View 1 (cartoon, one colour):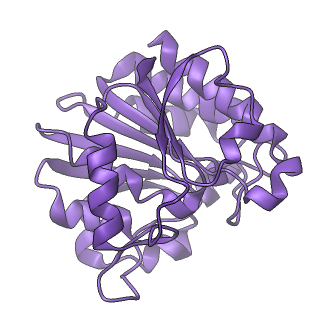
View 2 (cartoon, helix red, strand yellow):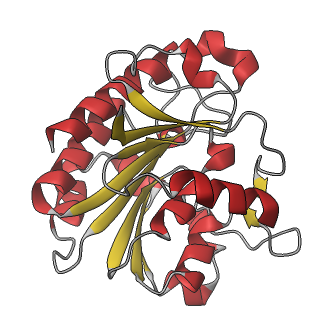
Length: 247
């Protein structure tokens, strides 16, 4: 079993994919867990912390759909040194909580900035400018932002410069929500961006080459009842896995 590759099985969606079958990954079996879809209550969070406690941060973690992207925060809780987060996402994931401060897939990144003492900064790539303008101004001060509009303009040199000029004084944790990709390169349960898979892989390779990376996670699977549309996710997961394994 490769504990540097962890598949978090909330919905059985990965059982219909092929990318992992030659890898002997570790599985976190969570299909019976309640209180964890979109919002994560304290009881579910306790179970999830126990489940990932036996795995290292180093490696790649597949989190299921964007409903469980808050798992990035729980993985980052295990990091015991100052670091930065690089987040590829079509959404900011920095919305204020709607239900009593519950950890949520829509607000986990802001909560991470507030509650994780070792997290120094978030590099956020993919949401549109309007969405970022709605983020709390205090949180914005801890974010380097590359908008969907700038990505859409296709100024490859400027985008590469943004990534290449990221500071190298601290290591990074990487989080990829495939909803940053255009439809056809991914099929997700949330609205999607314009980025091509080849572009995402190029940007990630730049990061791996230039930065110390502590660990990585990937989410953005489609809903289980839409599995027939998820073949592109399988292909994307395979390429993301192979890229991570090279570094």
